Length: 183
Picture 1 (cartoon, one colour):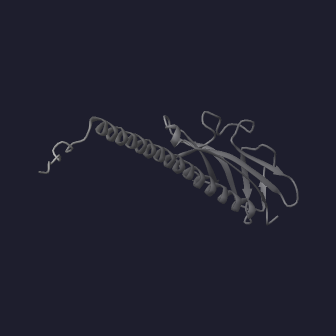
Picture 2 (picture 1 turned 180 degrees about the horizontal axis):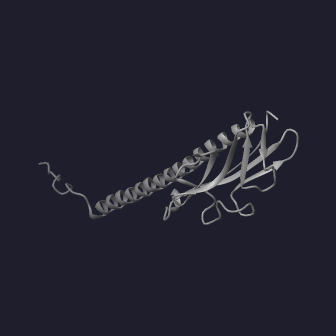
Picture 3 (picture 1 turned 180 degrees about the vertical axis):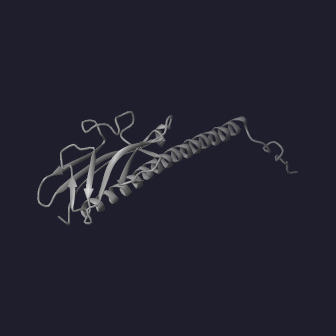
């Protein structure tokens, strides 16, 4: 007669159950850590993208205005604002100004003022200076009084907001030189 021993091997041992729980816990913790790490990286990338887009736009507008200008005044080193005289003789001033507590770059033409940077970014470094005089400004124009005139532009934009998480902060430095085309 053949004996049936299936009833004796019908369960899991305590060791097998503990190992499965341990492996499941390890995979869960690793997956959760990976998920939060990806979320932080995504937040940082979004903040940097926003700052870069604002800076690229402001730089593009300033370059176009300077390149097509007849003259820039005052043409001095370390200026925090720049007045541009266009081909028609009208003036346009590029400067740093405060709006609702946020330092922005603006283009002023007579009574019309256009902000070149958005309200989510500020001119300056975190905790640093912004919209101050030429010695401490983070928007600086350096003019080379050559023929044709060349203007160096440098500024720093930072993701604004009080209490922003570290992974949501970004600061980007922008710098270029522009030579007047129509002098």
